[in-house]
Image (cartoon, rainbow, N blue to C red; front, side):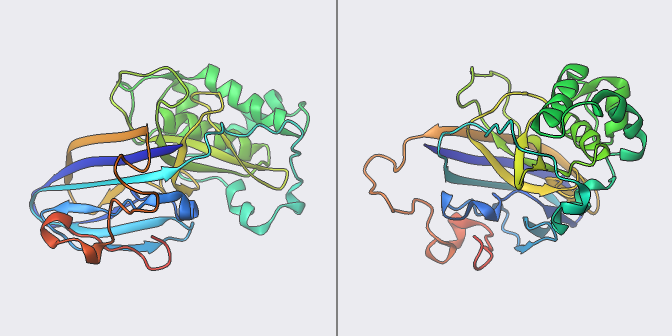
Length: 302
């Protein structure tokens, strides 16, 4: 299947404001990204891209005073399979973990493993050291927290979510990550697109989503404590220790978000009248500046 991804956001700034953005599809998608999700802006601003310390495709710019619109649209190929479930995958002892996993055992800004260890071990310490222990953590978080947009706040930590029992998707992910790490299971935060594909349509406005990955067996596996079911069409934008590392935007000054729409939907590809292999979104050098806005792909990645 093919999935169209994209967003349309706008900021209002009183003065020129530097901004970091994590709004591109993850480089690991490779050739699955059949139409590139280049960033476009109005008015035109310079947008530079780079690979951050976690392997994400990040962008940086300076927004001018006034209103700036930033948008993109891309197309991703997906095999249509739900998130894998591997019941016999084993939790590895810390000494056997790859070095890349070790940072994902440590506490971080939103995941206070030192406080939540006292919660985790009595609840999960007796369970088998395999997939079922991670799933038990996911079940606990899914049942313990109640989803609530009106009660969302960007500073809520895993411990606060556990105590308050209200959450949005990032809080579900943070709490599950913190409990996994407290049990010596590497866990990392993911953000990206998750549309209503293979599930009943949700009439609520679409948003970006957050979930997590745990390292068990010999690889990272996807878990989603909010939905608690394998999903189809999950498209990663960025991975990190928690939301600090993969915030959609970080402004260094006052930038008011004045518009925010996200789109993720299954489509027929190529569009009617086009042949397979035709690039509906031509590379920047083939587009006029007036239609393009500001686009700066990273060589070898985009």
